[in-house]
Length: 236
Figure 1 (tube, rainbow, N blue to C red):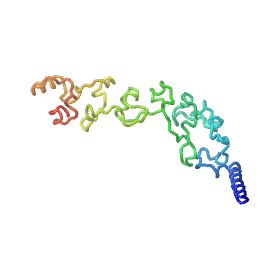
Figure 2: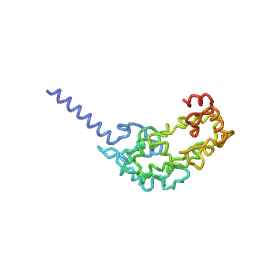
Figure 3: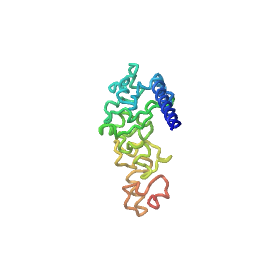
Figure 4: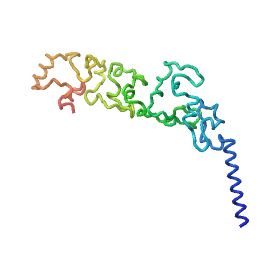
């Protein structure tokens, strides 16, 4: 009985010592990993962000990062140039909880915002205007497009896009041209092949009638590329 009591006292004393060490030196005792480089000044001050037994709190984040200044000013007070960062969007988030997106203790080289951003946190109007935060790709196709990104892409991932041009016509080396060559006036719901070499209405009509083909208005129904064999079997 006496030995059991001694063991209980010993276990209790060890627990009290561990709790005391965790309170006095919480960083080496409890930290799951290094803070990011931006938060290194807080590495030895866990209680700057964590409340005992309650964890990290949004109000502690906002003490250094006021919501109305996020994306516009650094915590040092220096203004952020609009040309060096994405537009400020935190102010219009539906869910204003910092920890919904931001994670720490993932190493010094990790970005401060290593959590998963969900576009559902934005109001519906902002979700329809991708250009407010994202820069349009600088390629031939996207340079000519005037429609919103949501016409082909959704917020789950940029790729794959919902629209695949090869389902209709293959843009091979013989058709590496500006979109407006086939889609005039920025209207991508229609097209015309009458803009290249012998593709004139009279020539197309004569050539097809000679072959006994009378339905030739919808070119891509049979022609999916510049390859002649594809036209012979309807483009399949």
